[in-house]
Length: 283
Image 1 (cartoon, rainbow, N blue to C red):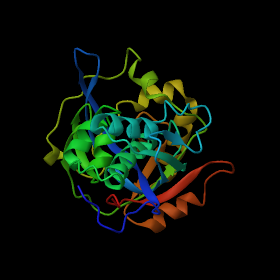
Image 2 (image 1 turned 60 degrees about the vertical axis):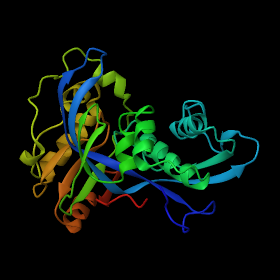
Image 3 (image 1 turned 135 degrees about the vertical axis):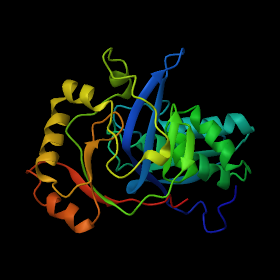
């Protein structure tokens, strides 16, 4: 996979966020992983990364995230996995500018990992195909493959079986309640809905479905419920209002940017939110 000469060691590499426009849990595998159906939407909002070459083989993170050890950081893990699988001797220092909130359900760590795989495959001249990078990405997390694919996509399995999808233009008001939610916490709750009937993607339309993780997150984290209630009481022109992923971020979808911005201007003091559009991955 080649990105062309425009991407160099001096480049700033984008790592966009995502939304789950719906998320159904349709079963559970014998190994404990949940079988999902979801629709990923990539966003014009995200983190950025820069990479500095090293000749000592070391993978280093220039600015570790508070509370996250470099060994646990998905960008570092992605670089080390690529190094291990290809026998690459080059090293790298990763500079991460974080905008996607941690524990927000917007896929920040997964997107950082995917961008790291794509960038270092190019910068180290490894020549791996995008399909191969998706397979590697799945070892890091179920959301990594969609960011490597770089397209909006209908997903099944644990999230790795992807059908690239063209979606209508839309805008989103995204709210980040003042909590961070570990994905494992939500999936471990005994009464989580795990038997939603599967659908064919042809049955999807804007506003379709729900997020099966949402009731559990709202019960455990009242701040999520409060933010959703605020959106649903005011977003009268929204196609849908729901939580993304395992939370904590919630969103309302609009056909026009102006409608989203009107509601954004009404946010209570101290609330955190963004108006963003959907995109195809810049890489």
